[in-house]
Length: 116
Length: 113
Image (tube, rainbow over all chains, first blue to last red; front, side):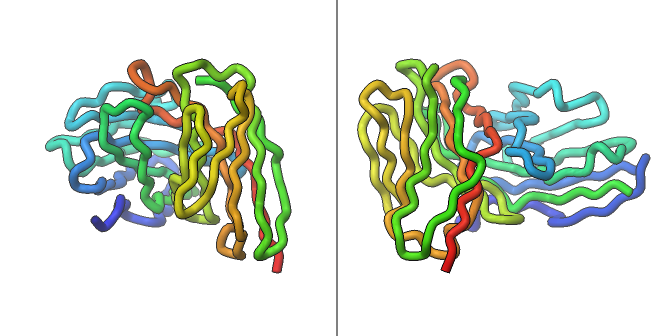
């Protein structure tokens, strides 16, 4: 178990460019989540996958954002036409589910995006 | 999910117990109390969770009041590496959106030498 892995750790991009982040969850975890965190705030839920199915998308996920988990393993989060307001830490987490009480989620180190 | 209230910051001396309070007065009977922490520039880390009874693991103890309207996370012997933002989260036990964590701003615990 190598934990949740995210790549890249840091990304600087120019406004208007597209960016893609990758998340590799813990191998046996069927649930995968994306969160976004801005300075001074707690993480905010973006979207959730159970295996390859995307079951919930937050209103925070505008139409410029798209997430996939094609084979129920790794996931990608793409942001098109980036804006300065997209600058944030993007966190991926995974867990086993369903389970009563909600199995604890394990988070990756995050990808810090800076849009200039 | 029920909302939680935590103090924005706390200090603790190294080696002493750190007691972090959380109010969740609107908690429902089927909601768990979870604690996560986030060390600077890292992802959140699960600490402990509980429903009614007090819980203890290798990291911390969780004390939940009898009426379940508040709880306290106890780090028995705080070290400098425990300096982090601690989040108290209430989450429904099953069904609905129990997969989702709703983070507040948490408590910044600073452990001083």
